[in-house]
Image (tube, rainbow, N blue to C red; front, side, top):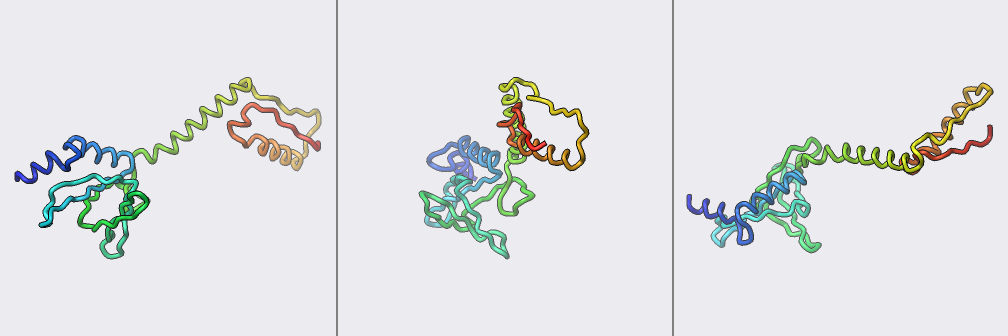
Length: 173
């Protein structure tokens, strides 16, 4: 009882319980993974816990037990850590059995798409905010010429925000 309470009050010499829990939550929310290394005394009793930086942890897979152990990178060196020395907490991940997924990951594509749309709109407005021109002809266009013109226009305007509101030049009829 008392040993557990002491461990929870001061999980390691560098952190209070609040700081320790904050590191766990931050790791989970930003990466979907939290790894707690157990600090053992010479007799093998747990006397502390340290939150490992999840970006430096590599899970070593094992075909029978799923996880053989861990590698922790410090100053370019891979330090092996035994499987039973780490408490692994992960959020669900449909793409991996070994690593969790941050709740922010699915939002990344949606946010990037929104940012691209805003950038395109701003570029379009900087160039006047109007279509740069309309192509008309007094003659009918045969299907092959129409396809060629549409392909040329598409190619010239496919630069995203850099081509928003620009003129295009067609040649060859």
